[in-house]
Structures are given as C-alpha cells and as structure tokens.
Length: 102
Image (cartoon, rainbow, N blue to C red; front, top):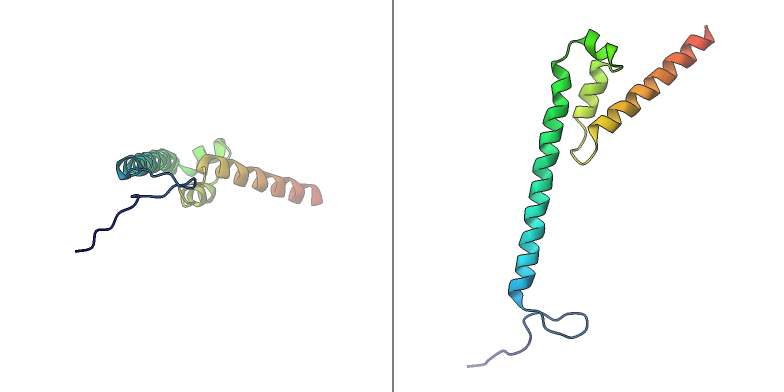
C-alpha cells in the first residue's frame, strides 16, 4: 500500500495551509455574497413599487413609465435609481434641444 504524504495545500511561500480555515473562508464569502444578492433583490423589489404609480404621478416626479420599466429590468448589480435618474436627465436634455429648434 502506498502512502501519500505532503501538505494539504501549498501556499505561495511554500507553507502549508490547513483545509478547514480555507473552507471556512470560502463559506463566509459565499454567505456574504448570498446576503448581498438578497439585499439587491429587496432593493429592486422596492424600486419596482414605482410601477404601482399612475403615469401622471410618475410625470410629476420627472419620470416616464417606460424609464421606470427600463431601469427595473437592468441587472441587479446596476443601481436602478441612478440609471433612472440618468435616463430622465437625458430625456429632458433631448426635449430642451427639440424645443429650442422650434
């Protein structure tokens, strides 16, 4: 019977690193990522509440339904509120330019 000996994991400086702490670190990172993802989903769900507003109310606060829907469909990693604000700003700029051309 052949016995295999040697370090469990080899670090960059040739030192050994036990398996359990590496596994613990991995699990901590995984849990943190899952929590962050859950938080992003909750924020997006709250953002989608804007879609409950009627078009007049959305217009009063400076947004169109299309802009809210577009921002709500962005990947979770993108801040939908900032994206919505930017969309509305660009639309207003286009409207001002069109008005000045008249």
